[in-house]
Amino acid sequence: MKYIYIFVAALLVWGCGSEPPSSTQSQSTSQSQSTSQAPTPQSPAPEPPPKVVKTKTREDWIRIWPEPDPSIVVELADNIYACNYLVIFDGSGSMNFDYCGAESNKIGRKANGEPMVRMDLILPAAQAFVDKVPPDANLGFMKFEGGKLYEVVPLGLNNR
Image (cartoon, rainbow, N blue to C red; front, top):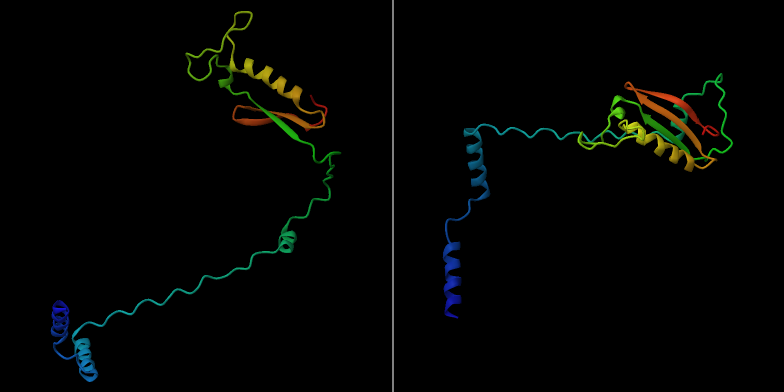
């Protein structure tokens, strides 16, 4: 109990001090300080809110879609849901290398003793793939050679 009285007394002592300045006294002090100090810069005006742009509706997009050329006749396939398989052969010079990955990893030799090249492995694999393509699916062939892509067989049916 004795410690509580000491604590309360300490608070009263610390709380005692000079009286706070009156409102008129604080105004005169702030005025005298403002004349002796440089004016404080005003904060920049807040940025305006971002402009809201209405997105285009479906009808707006339909209006800007280019009209089809009436001179071009487009024929739809009998089955527009048929799967499409497009095989692209890499005919670049690297397909004539006789190794896979590191040069020490040789592919092997043909029956006649010549070294096999990468293309020798691709052709049987491509034929096995084509044999498994369903007959109602579209199939096409392209080749990449000399930095360009060429269509060899257009995408379609009955071109196996």
